[in-house]
Amino acid sequence: MTEPSDVGAGAGGGVPPGAGGPAVPPGAGGPAVPPGAHLLVCGGAGFIGSCYVRDVLGRRDGTRITVLDKLTYAGNRANLTPVEGDPEQAARFAFVQGDIADPAAVDPLVAAADAVVDFAAESHVDRSILDPSAFLVTGVIGVRVLLEAVRRQTDLARAGERHDADGRSMGAPRFLQVSTDEVYGSVEEGSSREGDPLAPRSPYAAAKAAGDLLVGAYRATHDLDVVITRGANTYGPYQHPEKLIPLVATNAIDEEPIPLYGDGLQRRDWLHVADHAAAIDLALRHGAPGGVYNVPGGTERANRDVVAGILARLGRPWSLVRSVPDRPGHDRRYAMDGGRIAALGWRPRVLFEAGLAATVDWYRDNEAWWRAVRDSAWDAYYARQYGDRLAASTEAERPA
Ligand code: NAD
Ligand code: TDX
Image (cartoon, rainbow, N blue to C red):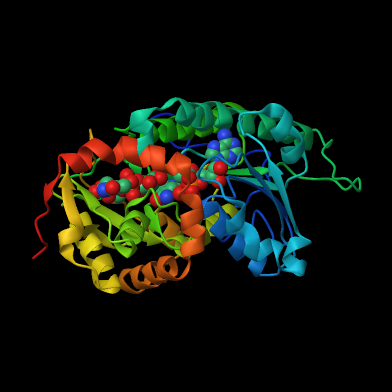
């Protein structure tokens, strides 16, 4: 049965069940994407994508992964070193540097894949405020290029003309778009459900919402086998130091000022990266065709309290924290209902306080990783984003 929170049928409507896709609804049989499948993982050298690749290949269930990644400032081959340094995993892994907005790069890779998981995006809200161009190229044109490739392969499969390199028949590829809680906009109270209207408020969130709408359009128009996940604020090892938790940890290690936007009472729902990756994999394999799945962390915290927790772990004083002018259009709160992903059998496993402590320890123990990321381009970004703000900063009020 369809549900109002599925994509592709207009506001609030249901979606007819997929006619040609290989996917089955949860509980109705085997997984839509079985172990041993060949996955194309776009954006797999980034923070969440690389965790997904490490975790899925680490299961050693025969799954093969090809990563397509442009290696923007946020993409980092070092995030995949654990995979490439393990001969058994390396044999099931391939890396292609390329752009999801480039059909010449995308088409042959989608042709060889059983499923496509799209993590590729420009992912930092502050950078989208400075310059949204790349957000739109990747988030709109790039998603369209992927969907067009999936559409062509779906047409071939429906005609019985899709084959692998050994001539074996292949079904239509499933496409999973990794989206975000930010598409719902700021949620003053309660929690967003999958069927709620999209109300993005930053250029980043608007680009992500546009991607979601395109996925829905290709579902409605071409009956593609698509799934969307909308994850909460994610944290853990290998996150680029531009984001709040690693920024605070790395600045605190160096005893540098820590910029806290506005009053620091904005609230985020924190989700450990391993839990996020597990939810994406579950939705890929067992999600309903056309299904949308919120992935909440279940751990709502004010920014100020998160910062205090990091400082306590590192034994650094609150006096490092500076209240800086607020982010324009700053969303006050995100919160999502997670009933649908829970019904598939997912629960977050990492408790926030334990996950935060382990993450801070990882940054303390892996300085070489983040110091290499903080190159001259980082210095230029940091000066542009924080120079004037820190100059105008005031003492930040301590949490109670
Ligand atoms: P990230 O910035 O760490 O990684 C993005 C990756 O995509 C990088 O490896 C980058 O090189 C690659 N990329 C960017 N543009 C590309 C293009 N045009 N073609 C190919 N590769 C390209 O981001 P992340 O935090 O790992 O986020 C991954 C996905 O999850 C994004 O779609 C993001 O919107 C979504 N998301 C992130 C969070 C979060 O808190 N970080 C929460 C919910 C959803
Ligand atoms: O220097 C800072 N000071 C500060 O107070 C930074 C970088 C952030 N903040 C605040 C802004 C937010 O309220 O901390 C909160 C978290 O900020 P980010 O780490 O930039 O994340 P956010 O804007 O909430 O978006 C994140 O979660 C949803 C990811 O970056 C997105 O990719 C994801 O979709």
